[in-house]
Image (cartoon, rainbow, N blue to C red):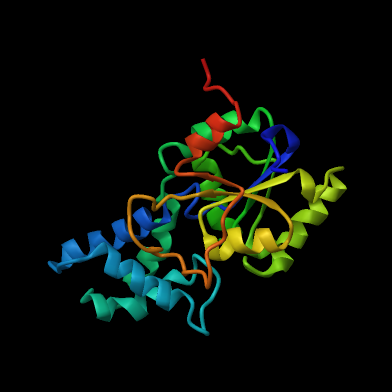
Length: 238
């Protein structure tokens, strides 16, 4: 039998791509560099090249790795080379913005649930993201904390251990994310109830996120965080 929202005490969240518009931030910075250089630019092409470069064997931790990624994709996009541009892309992360509905939805949900961030980003980047979202999290786990990235089950195990120390269990967690590859598939295999926020519902393909080997049908499915907050019965602030 499917669970109801009343069955959960915790909601765990992917951050980059679910709450923070990473595609918009990434493309926006590259587009700005292209405009300054007088080069034509295609955002979807850039995302496809980013995706391939981000998962090379020598990839580092995100978002420091964006400096390396720029060096890989710039020649393919006709963008100017140089370490300064790579650093500019990495530093642009500080200004990446939440999706328009993210902060309000999280504030609503935080009145009823303990919200836990689970991000493959480094701690310094998460600090900027959390601040932009209104610092709604009860706890936050980054690649720096876990030493690994989703979809590694070990990342989730760190969170399970925290929840157990807090007096809860994984049965009381709803895992919320946009990435089928990093979150929805593995959360199903680990026995979590999950919620897919389909941010690219109006666009084809997987954009900057790696495509999963197979699609996982989620327990809950919304195209926005606002849809989740509404379904959970959390009312907007008066």
